[in-house]
Amino acid sequence: MRTIAAQPTAQSNSTLPRSKGRFISSFDILASAGVGVVLTHAREPHRVCEALREWAFMKERSYREWDCVRGWSLYTDNPNDKPKSEKIVEATSALLRINDVPGEGKEAWREGVFVMQYPHWVLPKSPVFIQCLKSYVRDFSETKQRLVLVVPEGFQLPKELENDIVMMDLDLPSRTELSDIYRRIADASFGDNQMQKELFPPGEVESIISIGSGMTEMEFETAVGRAMVSNKATFPNIPLQDFCRVVRESKTEVVRRSEVLELMSAGRMEDVGGLDILKGWVAKRRVCFSKDAKAFGVDKPKGIALIGPPGTGKSVSAKAIAALLGIPLIRFDVGKVFNSLVGESESRVRSALKLMEAMSPCVAFVDEVDKAGIDPRKGGGDSGVGQRVMGALLTFMQESQADIFWIMTANRVDSLPPEMLRKGRLDEVFAVLPPNNIERLEVLRIHLRNRKQDPDAITDLALAVDASNGFVSAELEAAVKEAIVDSYHANCSAVTGAAIATHLFNMKPLSVAFPEDFEKMRAWAEANAKPASSPSAEQASRPRERSRAGTGGRKVELN
Image 1 (cartoon, rainbow, N blue to C red):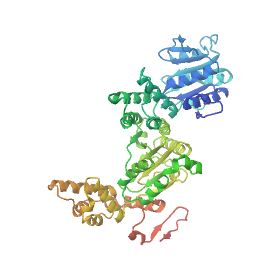
Image 2: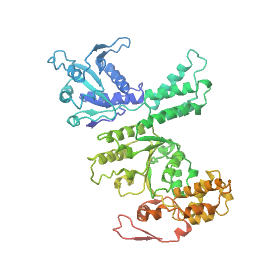
Image 3: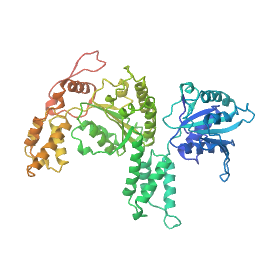
Image 4: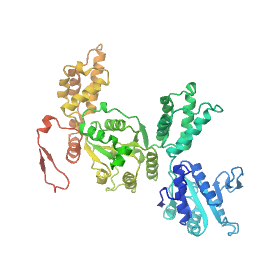
């Protein structure tokens, strides 16, 4: 299937909203190039129809629209005219009607735009429908007939048509379009009262629009309407945070429906113990998304990979990075992609990436990507699904111009394609290893402080630091939680470092429970990635042996 991306051209109508204008301009190019049949995936079929109707009227062409309830409807450019109908509700008969195939062409519609909404129920099952489409692809290239099939996002063409039909999708509403929707609803909320027409100043409206990015027209209209009704007690002096909270709840529902994406709450960098090199790297790139940075010639950051054993703080770091960058955090669940039905994995990925692009700027968090088992170098029983899914993801990461910062985490990399971690696709690969003694103290203090304990009052906290050598951050948190429970049970006595150390002694860390796996993960990250933490004085005094690809297997001593 050929794919055409909607793009702005010299023919774009500047008076049209951005995404609809791009769609109309791109369709104009296809129509002028003699492309007779186009397939459009749509969450909003009505927007596709509106855009094609506008194009038809601008070009002085007839416009007909079909659905399985009303059949064919002929529209005019006069909004007061009622559409003329031919009640052919069966899809194959409706398709044949365009060229009047049963009537030998005597009553064919010789010119115009013909839009069929959701014929996908019939398309894969009807050889007549498929053969007719193949004929129209050839025939319409020499006429002024243009057919557009509007289908759901997950639909895939039958193999017989994959190389014949061009695919062109309509983007989700732009910020300009969302702003128009908000303005229309806000103005209507005042009714006949002309004394006040502003709920929020322009800067605050931008916050609402940012939350709404990635929603359809109907979804955003519903979200804004819910926010109005939920805050009618304070109208028109609605607190911005109350209004945004309702819109954000609606947005969360929309993202959750994708079954692949999850809108997550950001964390705090203060909750990340250690990892000073990683923190500094992110802080330096915090301003690289700005217009001033772009004008200076700074490339926007693409993202990072965090590689290391489980429990070392990779996920917590991702949440904190989103907070530091000040943009939403969206979790991309690769595992759920492969839990879908056969043939749906690729379409789910395309839909998710399209939604994520509309929601940019954002942080895309792909957690434990190694557990998806999607190495395209290896065979398997997925009929190449893993290779196609990974190919779509990597291509998007490479070519998308959206402001998306990728954070990929993995415990091991032996199941990942090497091109995923190369420079250009990601900016840096960090090794997130078990904390050193300085970091362990910081981690313990963070978890004590987060549970209303004063770490400065614990005079023997060094005992817990010494006892925690080889433990990861998640295990330190578990020991702190247990020590606090014991202290509360003992008549709210003070938490001690000795109590934390006791729980650490009774705990078998991952490094002991799975020594070979743990060492393999640690060794790869240490040898092939940039350290996320500065070494302690003890670590710095020890020579490290590092083997890197490209040295011919020789071992290089680094002091």
